[in-house]
Amino acid sequence: MSCSLSAGETILLPGGRSGPGRVVMGLGWDARRERGYLGLFGGASEIDLDASCVLLDAAGSIVDVVWFRQLRSKDGSVVHSGDNRTGEGDGDDERIVVELEAVPGHVGALVFLVTSFSGDDFCQIDNAFCRLVDAGSGRELARFELSCGGRHNAQVMAELRRLEDGWCMRAIGANARGETFRDLLPVIHRCVAV
Image 1: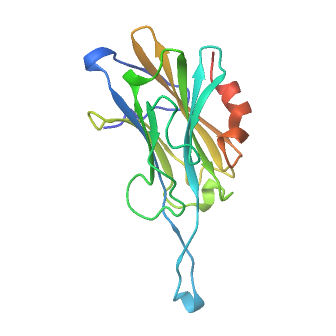
Image 2: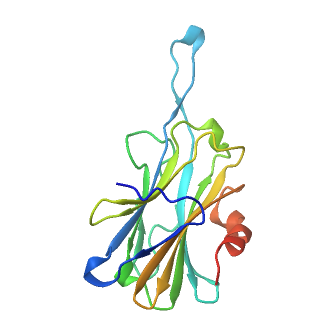
């Protein structure tokens, strides 16, 4: 069951035993099928979408980044499933798992991103989506359909912000252009309040 949040909407995630201990950012898409000679002998071509998580301190400075070149945060609280370069398979093709209770106290926010490393616009990619899920209950907290959303190839998806007694999640859904998290840093700083 999804909350179906729109961009800009915020929900409180309960703290303690009633709140999610673990959240998962899932990214999925379908491999592009190329048509071969007379519509035969086609195969899949490479489309490389990437999920990333930027950890910020209370002042908005980068503490750490989890992405395809660093699959685990330095403290181990955020772990990436690994780089999928084709979109083959069903469901989430890349996943980032966050153990909320293990996130160090100096981390004030986690920002989730999607970028197209291959440079493909989202409108060229079939069935592309990103979602944030409460891993304990399986409840989908937010979901964005990326395909045919425009001529962009990146999105600042959502922010998890630390509160005194838990976390809140804000759906951002800011479309952008960029191939890695570095390209999206100006957008992150515009979208994420410190």
